Length: 290
Image 1 (cartoon, rainbow, N blue to C red):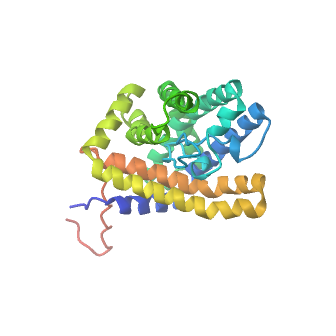
Image 2 (cartoon, rainbow, N blue to C red):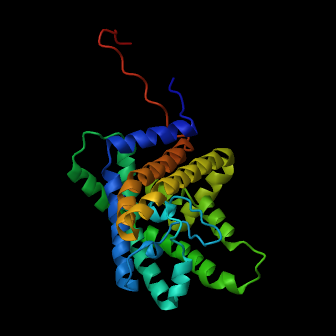
Image 3 (cartoon, rainbow, N blue to C red):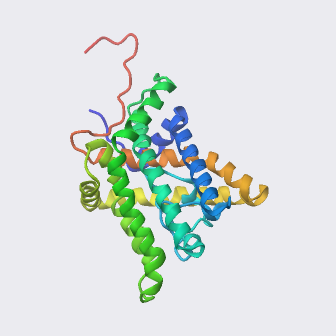
């Protein structure tokens, strides 16, 4: 009988899988580079303040849950949406609109790549990975576009509406809670073919039904991103803002990919018809068949 993996074992096996097959991490690095180019076109600036964190952080709550499409901005303390508010409504909305489109296209392809990594297709050529990404991006673009628009609406509320309402409410913590509740929604969109609203409901239901495991997963995610922040921060200070951000982009890409695969594995472990189990050891050469 195959033994079910624990949460810590799923994180370790995800790191190992990405290190052995790093092609999805290339997609993460390219996604961040595209985000930097978009920021340069919109703001005319290149630097950490122009990065869009997945966790819609404010300066008073500098924590982000790694998204299904990870980004170095998730571990970059200086990358806060307060910069977008200060830049003005028009540039901020333009940047959000462009990044919603880019992220909606990339997210479906990226999760499809993670599915391929999860299937342990080590012999698959690079060309097939490109095809998997393109097909996943095309098939799920509409669902992710609506999903990303919903989250962008949350970002806009946190940016512009929250400062004009009573100060005793922690809107950053509220946004953090929402992202935790919908953390499995991208996996549900790709794996089950659900629409964005149904995927959000499904994610909330999974978190509620498996709250203990989900909280342990969240703890591992925050520890991993916090550790990455501690390691990458001195690098940027040593080599400068621009070169440091580029270096951090490529260094964080495999870490963010492993964390996204970790979330996918936890999600699949919740599905009774598709249990995530540790592979049984291969029989020795001299063993007789059962």
